[in-house]
Image (cartoon, helix red, strand yellow):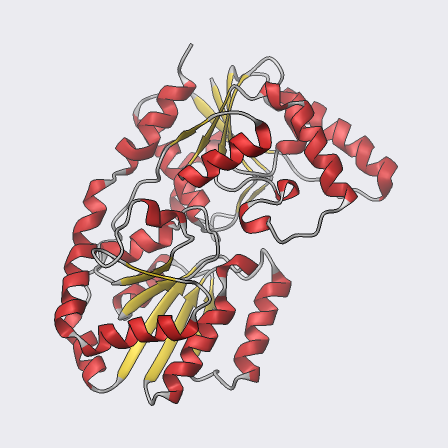
Length: 379
């Protein structure tokens, strides 16, 4: 029996799509498994999780106050999780959220899929966080029990290097798959918009500081100053980092961009499809994002993508061939690339065609799910 752990199931994101695809693959392979998570809300995550509702076991989080209370509840929660894991011989920890409970996994074969290393290691998207005593303690605590982990897996090579740096352990690199969202865009509508000096830009990602939406707002300003009628749509939950999402919303007001920027938050399947269908280009200028599943979803419906060089997705993309790479904070360069696409119909159509073809190279089953399951089933 395999226990699969994910911190929450009330968000739509790349990590959750990756987890869902693994569940679906294991189900087709008739592998016995169950799911442990802290929170579930099928209206806020991918609806297909609902078909696994009977396999979900809740591990609720207890709010802790004071040092003594935190220590007490850490021990209590570890014991609770240990009981929940009793039927399992194999454990898959999916990303972060359970690293403080490593003692609960002793005696199990444990496979930790790390899309981003825990914040206490201060690498990747967390490299600018201040060093605190709490971080030092948590890091030492995790390292004390790292031998519990049978194997690490990551979705991009730079995170393999970080696992080696932080844990002194090797990691398997399993790329994510690409699932087409099967939207037939009206390419002629985009070309007509360009002819009329207008453009609709789409971006996507749960609101977190490394999303770099501030720069995207500056790009919109620059385009407006050039006389371009631009509208930016942003998809992504605003609940995970409310301070950051409020900061971006405030910037939209300060810059008087309310008519040009729409923050949609977490959307349903219909709205998600409509926004992709009516966009002209997709921009993903995250800073040091580990992968970037949203990039490939956009490409699958023929949206040319402008992506920052530090995004993990660039490991399998080619600059100028199927995507355009940019420095994520170089506003002028990003504006220049947008203008180039608007002014060159042939280049725009070439990227549309290359984008639509690319997704066929990486299926979820071949690129990720079969490899992850084979690793967990090793004796």
